Length: 405
Image 1 (cartoon, rainbow, N blue to C red):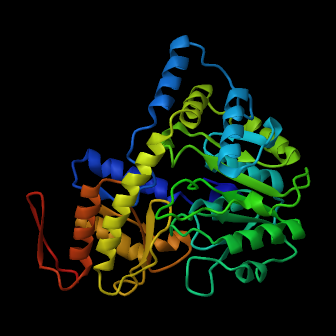
Image 2 (image 1 turned 120 degrees about the vertical axis):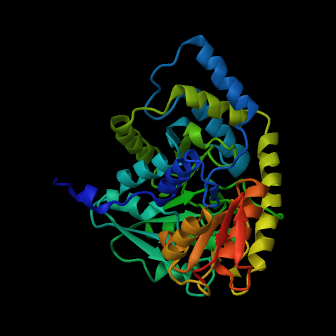
Image 3 (image 1 turned 90 degrees about the horizontal axis):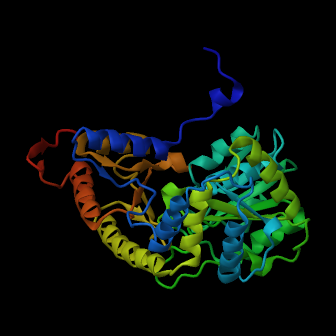
């Protein structure tokens, strides 16, 4: 069978594949623990569920406008004013089937073949392939100081005449790093000066801990005209625990938003009117569910960090946001894919190899599951790779003997 250029060169989403693997093993009755997950276990806000139920009961579930309903756009306007201090107009907004689609149509709207897109490493697994889907070239940038926090110098030295866009994801998936205000100021001003699109992926904006503040990029913008190259991405998936509702949005200048809407209209039409109603309920409703989720995640974070720090030789920069840790396990195994496979095969714990995020030797370990899963999963990991652990382990009634360390 002959495949086209895109079919040959775009790889499978590792994180989605992992969710599928977990579901298959769980269905088989395997005692599998998912520490690679990217969705909170909390229920969606009651206001979201009530809103979608009310709409469903009307029996009126029809097409939505390609760029989102007016009611949904009003909710985004309110959200943007409350969380960014910026008043935007409906024409500045496109609502998509998840923040992922919003990023994808933004890239399709602005990129030509052979354009380059810069993003700091570690990076979300989908960025490189999304750029490739546009015929453009991904340019990951690893911070030279050994941290997860890029410096403006790291970005500038990778800019060429082909650079069309920069993607910034803070709080960052997978590291949990929150980029400092100095860097956000510098990157906003640099992109504006050079006329480079700056895509701010803010999907984890509300999930920060210990008083950490996420810098508002609008604080440093000078050009708010239709020449502005700033695109803000957000959605309800993470902070509202509404991953399956698939509602996200982008805010940008009117010309780029119109181009994005044209593309989306031919791809998927507008996002589900039913799910937009749920998102409206979540955004406009009582926000206690967001605070409750943050409290749960902060407790989970503490437990996971304590386990990771108990490993001799594991290097961890503590996450300030999101619900991920990104720990360096290279003392035990430099090949993160090999290590992740060993943990799945031997002790049935799912983690995500660091190489998928652009940094070898690391594992992304999530703390969005239950305390029980974090505790048991980390104990299994320690037993699997730490030579000082006992030689035997029981998982339920199954006795395991470690013969590979």
